Image 1 (cartoon, rainbow, N blue to C red):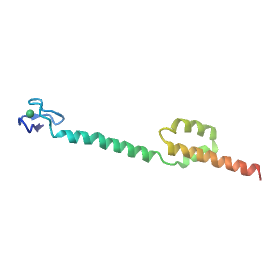
Image 2 (cartoon, rainbow, N blue to C red):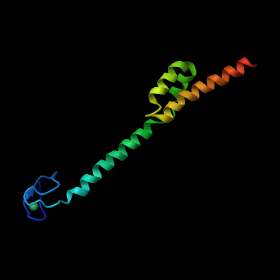
Image 3 (spheres, rainbow, N blue to C red):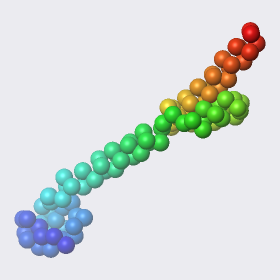
Image 4 (cartoon, protein in one colour):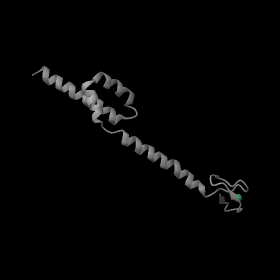
Length: 102
Ligand SMILES: [Zn+2]
């Protein structure tokens, strides 16, 4: 519980306005800060997950058909990690070309 700065009655911590006098409360900047923090956290989480992946590169190298399928599923959410699939498939393509024209 906290005290209304206007009428000094006890009100809930989560209230944006005093339920007795309607006074706007100081907790509003705190409540605005909270979603912003969560936004930063989720953005940070996504960027830490969206990293080049050696496993994906190997998948692209050994199973390019499956890799292309996974790439089409993940390119929107994890563009950097999905690109690892293409890198692996590209390396295999280059190796094929080298072997064919040797
Ligand atoms: Zn009040």
